[in-house]
Each structure stands twice: as C-alpha cells, then as structure tokens.
Length: 450
Ligand code: NDP
Image 1 (tube, rainbow, N blue to C red):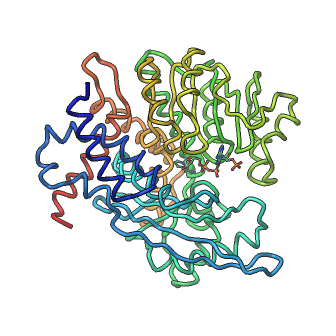
Image 2 (cartoon, rainbow, N blue to C red):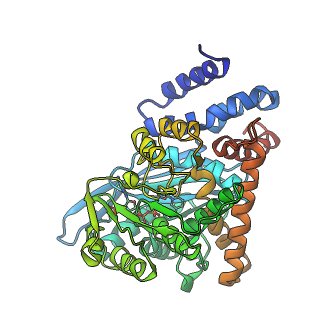
C-alpha cells in the first residue's frame, strides 16, 4: 500500500526530475531530504504556503565557464569550471571546490544542496555552495596544476568574495591547489581577504582545518556511541579513502583507542589486521600527500593484503566510516556490514551510502549518521577560519579543537532533538534534515519572496 507520505514524495520527485533531467546525484540528494521534510511541512503550513521546498532546491545562481590552460609539452588544453551558489539565506555561499574527471553539474548541485543543510547545522552564518572542474590533478606536474588553478581563478574571482561566496577544498583540491587559487585571487583583486578557506597557516589559514573533517567525524561518532553507554575504545574500524578526510579520521580513531584496519583509493584497499598505528599513518600521509602514490604501496611496505578493485566493507568491523566518494557503499555492502555485526556507520564523505543501503542499515538497528551531520567539522572550522580572518587573529590549536568538538556535540544534540522516534531510537538522517532545514527556511520566510 502506498502511504500519503510516499505519494507526496513521489509527486514532488517527478517535478524535480522533470526540471533537472538526467541529474541523478542531484535527484538522490533531494529525495533524501524530501522524505523527511514533506511530512514535516504538513504539520507546518507556513513553510508549505511559502513554497519553501520548491524554492530551496533551485540554485540562486550557477556559473559555468571555460578553463583554458597549457600543459608542460606546450599543448593547449581546456576544462570546464563551475560554481553553484545554492542558498545564501543565512550567510555567504560557502562550500568546497572539487577537481575530478567525473565532476558534472549534477554532482556539484547535489553537493551544494547538501551543503546548505550541513552549514545550517553548524549554526555558523554560512549559506551553501559548491564548485569545481572536470580537471584531474592526478598525474599532473605542480606547474600544470598551478597554471590550471590560475586560469580557473581568472574567471571565478568575479563571482566570489569574503562576504559573497567563500570556496574551500574538496576531492582533488588540497593545500597546494588552495595556495595557487588564493595567490591568483590576490593578484587579480589586489586584496588580501579570507576569500578561500583551507589556506596554509602562513597566509591566514586556521590551525586544525586540515584535521577538521576527520576529527569532527570521530567526535560525532563518540557522541553516538555515548548514547549507548559505549565508546570507540578497542573497536575495529573500517575506513575507506586515503585522502584528507580518511587520514585524519584514522588519526583520531587511534587517539580514541580504536583500531583502524583499512584504507583505500580508487584502485583498491589495504587490510592491516594489526591496525594502522601512528608510524604507519605517517607513511600513508607521506605516500598520499607528498609522493602522490597509490595505496598498494602501503601493503608492499607493511606486508599486509591489498585487494585490487575492491571496497573494504567485506572486512568484519564494529564501526564503518566511508570517507572517499559518493555512492561507495551500496545495499550489498550494507548487507555485508550487517552480517558481520557492524554497529555504526558514519559518513565522512558526502552521500557515500545509497538510499537502499541506508534503509537496510536502519532496519537492522545499525546507527547511521549522514555526512551533512557527521562530516560538518570541515566546514565548521572553515567558518572559524573566516572569523579569525575577519578579526585578524589566530586561535591556538586547543581553542579551535575545543570549538570544533562543541560544534559537533551541538549538531548531535540537534539530530537527537529532531530525529527522536516514538520508541526512543534516533533517526539521524531525519534529525539532520529537519534541524538544518528549519534554520534556513525561517530565514527565507523572514527575508520575503527573494
Ligand atoms: P581527497 O581528494 O583528499 O581524497 C579522496 C579519496 O577518495 C582518495 O583516497 C581517492 O582515491 C578516493 N576516491 C576518489 N574517487 C574514488 C572512487 N571513485 N572510488 C574509490 N575511491 C575514490 O578528498 P577528501 O578526503 O577531501 O574528500 C573525501 C570525501 O569527503 C568527499 O566525498 C568530500 O566531498 C567529503 N568531504 C570533504 C571535506 C573536506 O574538508 N575535505 C569536508 C566534508 C566532506 P584516488 O586518490 O585514487 O582518487
């Protein structure tokens, strides 16, 4: 039997699909949110009357541009650049830049849409946006990456600003790329402002920003486990990815006494049953951040197993932290996790778990945290970087980390408040969607029909 909720969501999704044809990732992100918000709006006619849901899925502005650059052999190359300015009801647009060959408008719209709710959950004054390019920094020289970044910023600079839109990093955009982008912005505008976050400490960055998403994820997991009178100590933790988020998720897992046993990249994963310890993590960071090598080299160094072309979810664990890419954990992966007794899945990446997988986890009593809540630590510290830039001060590591922990605890509290089920259990997805929505929707109501 189709319930009234299902039929309203289906009707709404038909409209979304018609207006945004073939944008599958965007449909998926909207569907995840609509499921929670449509029934909520039935109880809150003020949002329905103002047509907030249809307005919130429409980007304020999207810029698409050509990015010409020259490779080291003197060949003319071209990529496509984007900035999706989704919603600025509660603050300037804010969200990362992704450089990856599979970047499309659909992927950036899904990311920008999720970002609106995530930024709202931090309670900092930041709207939502996202951008990037189908440029692949992998295999390019530093000079090629610099020329690309300079060309990208030569168009983007007109559309961003410290009070307008403040980009940051994401997949393929780390400290090297942010440095080149910031340098070109400064040159074009003759201004030294906090227009990008994730900057190096030497030129306005915040301490703990590189660590923030991974650390924040573990602070959130800690809160989830506390509600069960449990902790991460001695738990086996399966982590995907080996980039920024995964590296610091591994670091904080170790600090909390957990045992991280996997890491991956787009070619496969390594399984280290003894656990990735601090020394091995230092090797992994050097491999990925300096040598820009592949994950199998970790297995060669430490004599553990490398699974080519596979995902780590088949390794038995207590906690799973997907920290690589969207849709990397599907229904069959979720079934493996359930079969092996996994108790908690928290997303470090954006939308890594497919809708079917989420349902399966929730139905089997696995605690599940959506990225918009559990990976909000990165943008939270970006917000703190903006504050430090505005007051022209640097806070200490302790100060930033304490604020980050407080923000993650507060996000957890909001999820509990809005996501509590009648039986006392918590639906973190519903909680994050509703808490994120209410703040933005109230601001949109107050600002009128804009
Ligand atoms: P990085 O570029 O530093 O790392 C990305 C990792 O994901 C790499 O290990 C990469 O492997 C792997 N990966 C990429 N594509 C695939 C694929 N198709 N299959 C399997 N693995 C893949 O990015 P981040 O760590 O910054 O970002 C990871 C995720 O976290 C993204 O979803 C991002 O949106 C999200 N996120 C990041 C935040 C941040 O502060 N950086 C904040 C919040 C969310 P390879 O090297 O082979 O490409």
